[in-house]
Length: 332
Image 1 (cartoon, helix red, strand yellow):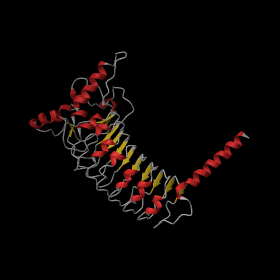
Image 2 (image 1 turned 180 degrees about the vertical axis):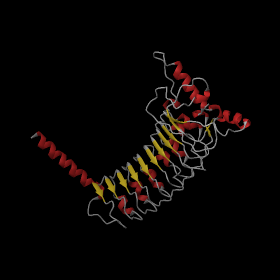
Image 3 (image 1 turned 120 degrees about the horizontal axis):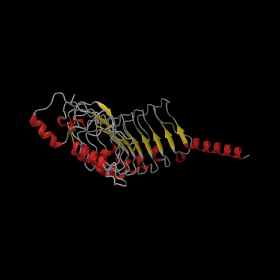
Image 4 (image 1 turned 135 degrees about the vertical axis):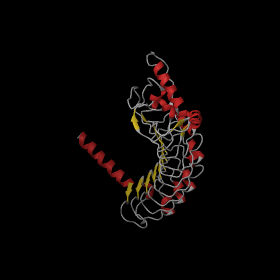
C-alpha cells in the first residue's frame, strides 16, 4: 500500500509539473497563439526553435510566476518591455536571435540567476544592469558585438561564470576583484581588440578557470605574472613541512593548467628590460599540465612535469601572440 501511495503521489506531482510547463518549441511558429489556459500558473515556458520575430507585451505581462523562459533560436529583434514584470524569473535564454539591445526593464528581474544572450547582435548591455541583477550567477554574452562590459558588472557579487568570448572587447571593467564568487572567466577570441587585462583579475579569489586566448595581450599584470608565481612557490615550499602552518590565500595557488613559453625570436635587450618590470610576457601558447617547482633556474619555472599537488582547477592561458618571455626561457 505504501508503494502505491508513493506512486500516486509521484503521478500527481508529475501531472502538476506538466500543467505548469508549457512547451511550444520547434513548431515553426511565426506568431504566438492565444493559449486557452491561465498563463499565471505557468512556471516554465519554452518557445525555442521557432520563427518568432516578437513576443507580445500582453502575453509576457501575464507570466507572473514564470521561473524559466526559453526563447532561443528565433528571429527576435527585441524583447518586450513587460519582461520587467517577471519578478520570479530565474533563467532567461534568448540566445540565437537578432537582438541589438536589451530593454532596461530587464533590470527589474531581480530574481534572475542565469542570463544567456549568446549569438545575438548586442553592441552594449544596460549600463546599470549589474547594480540590479545582484543574484545573477551565470552571464553568457559570447558571440555578440560588445566593445565593453558596463562598470556595473563588477557589482554582480553572486556571479560565478562570465563568458564574454567572441566579441570586440577593448577592455574589461575596473573593480573585478569585487566578484568574490567568480570561478570562470572567459574573454578569449576578442582577437585584435583586447590588448590587456586589468590588475584586478589576479585578485579574483575564487577563480579556477581563466581563458584569455586569441587576443593581443602581450603582458600579464603583475598580479598574475612571474612575481605572483614566484611568491606562491616560495610560500608553498617553505610551509610544506610545517605542521599547522597558516596558508596564504593566493590566486595562483589554484593554477593547474598553464601555457609554456617559447624562447625563439627574442626581443631586443631594451624591450626585455622594460617588459620584465611591466609583467609577464605572453608567448605563442603550448598547453602543459601542472605547475612545477623551479629547480636550477627561473627559466624552468614552467615545466611540463607537475611536481606540486594542486587542487582540481583549471587555468587556461592559451594566448596566440608573438611576444616572448625571455626571463622564463626554457633551455633546450
